[in-house]
Image (cartoon, rainbow, N blue to C red; front, side, top):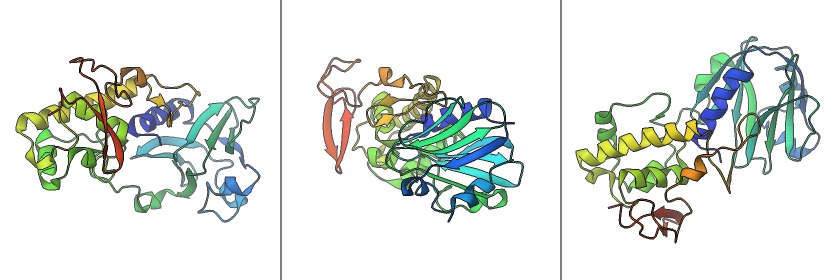
Length: 281
């Protein structure tokens, strides 16, 4: 499932490539699987009619939701699932497998939504109702949108009193880190996955805060991570390159790039977790 950096890459791409374009035609592809992507719309025509003729005025992001605000007082909302992809292609481009929604612009190609397991959700709603969408705003911190003062971050960590891996991977705390970025952040900050958040020193918190910000910003700069189950591509279909920078994630048995100790993998609450026992305490 695309994490926060990948969604932010798409958000920035949409701002550049889609804003001020008008939808000419919209197709929800044949078959029941494609309808699973638009469960809030009873019929294809209902979904299509809300988009055809509308111009994209703004592209925004709320957590892991992408929003295209239209000039007809409606907003297109996209939440990419585990294997969801959002790409902009030429109108003559082949329709590849798992393409479920095709949105053609009057000028400038098509926006397509693909998903191999139909876990992506797409819907159009009144712009006035966006703030009330269930689940969209269920998080405390979005580091890329509204960074906290480290003192506030410290207070939240102490209040939560949970193992660090559990807390960082919890979408209701920091949105969109997932297991990959949680492991990388903990390595960079020198903290073990099972350290309790209420037992960190002031120095620990400062390192962690800096690691969260720097890791996410670097991942966005490198256009996200494309690795195994992170099969992400940007709006042009190009993979990210942050995977070459990974320090611990899925590197068990390899040398730590900092101390040369072997990276280890453990099962923490049933989730594979990667860390360096020498560098992380």
